[in-house]
Image (cartoon, rainbow, N blue to C red; front, side, top):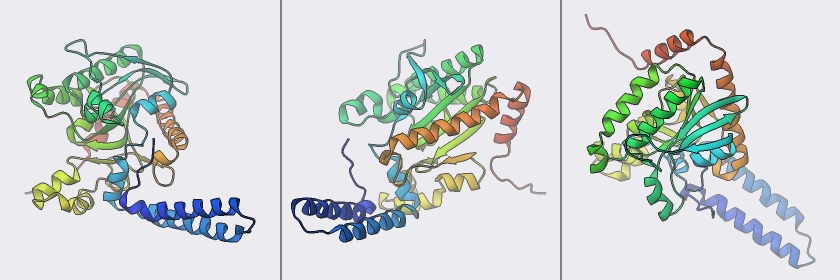
Length: 320
């Protein structure tokens, strides 16, 4: 897929174009310009480091939404092995916005599910832009219970702007489906790991996000509302989305500091779409390590730790 640069990435793109022209000129003539090429390569690397080492929250949101980023099915097929997709919630139908099935990760056989977006209009319509219907969350619950029944860990890959808010979803009780998942995941008798791989929007993300370990890729976000939605409410205009992104504390580093997640998984410089192989390796390594730790715990201890993890979320004051 052709990379479309984001606005803040244009200095890098300009230098890459100049470097390509210089190399082309060097190949077409007998003039030795190796020194100039090296100088431009060094400047390009410095520019990349300068831009990507100090990304703002809004810039990370933009990278999280990049259409070239690896999606859930990419990770299922590349990070996992022996992936077999299963379909349907056994109640209404199959939701293409939330594929999943059986897979192996290292030494762990597990069930896995995730939100899936599309890379073009046709696929986005099929996947509903990553916004799942009630049957998607009920399918996820089916996989959770399947894992519990056969002693398989459950892994979820979160990448959604939010659950689908349409009339059909409301008629089929989207809020009840998500609420049921929240309750059931708290008492699920099998290890669970959730990873935010792109967008982590509102209850649509939380519906498969209550887990023993919650991880985030470096350039992902996890929030109760999108920056644009927050800006529309507080500032009455979407142009304030960058300010809203900063105020929401939605990046991995912010949420790790607040104790809401357990680890930030590093990405290649510039984002997971710049080096898919490295991104896949980092995700596989992180999930495997957490599954090794979780599967070593007695089930009663696992459930106690899960309860304590979510019970301590937030701050409150006792007023006399």
